Length: 352
Image (cartoon, rainbow, N blue to C red; front, side, top):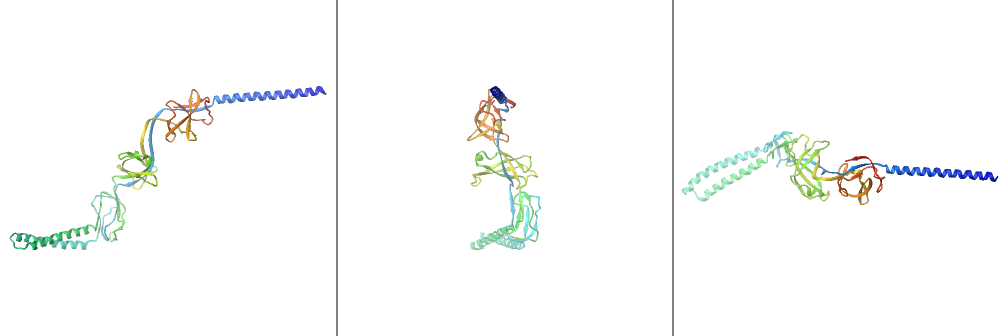
């Protein structure tokens, strides 16, 4: 019985020894495997080199006619003539609309006849005053009559002029809203006229860029859903920040003509504010955000080192580093969440 017990104990001890040996070997193998994997961790890297960085922003704007006027008459009346060629160009001073003015024209003819008579009387009295054939008072009364009639004629011409609507500048007529025979008032919109040779581009920029905008500055813009670039030149700014939006209003002029450029249209305006030929740009995925700071992993002597940086302008896939890196540094761009300080590095791809 005692012999069997000893054999059983020996067997149990043997099994325990075999189990612990297996566990030890497995653990050692796992540790070696982990160490091997840690050493052979593959990452992507990016070599930092100076490059040209163009500082620009994109804002929204709208096109406006350089000159645009709602054509309205100064007085009420009945339309007797319409010359509003829709969509056509007219020269400055062209008669566009005329109201009934026969009564004013009749008064004008009467005044002109009176003036002609008074001029003849004045001419005769000028000869008589030389030989004392007329009193000085009568002579001056006749001269007063001549000047009074001339003033009445000037007043009547002004009234007749108010019965006409003429083009205030060279431009294109819009859609007309009246016809012959219509009775209009001073508030009736007859049509619109706009300059067609050039346009204005109005847009707003954030106040921090206000000092960068100067008259003569060239800007580029695209129309909605188009890739074609158009040019414009800044002519003025509002010189005051809007208290609600904290933006500065800017106006540019467009001297080129195109059928796509229509007053009121939406535009994307691209502003180039400066350029840096020695900017250090790195991929955005290399940035490790931290509380109050940003850092990147830099490869030095084959090991990972965490470096605190400061950033500047952000582009679509890269960001400018203003402090913390030097030209030639190698920045890790993949696997950054699994790396620790002084981890050994092995590269899958290095981008220069």
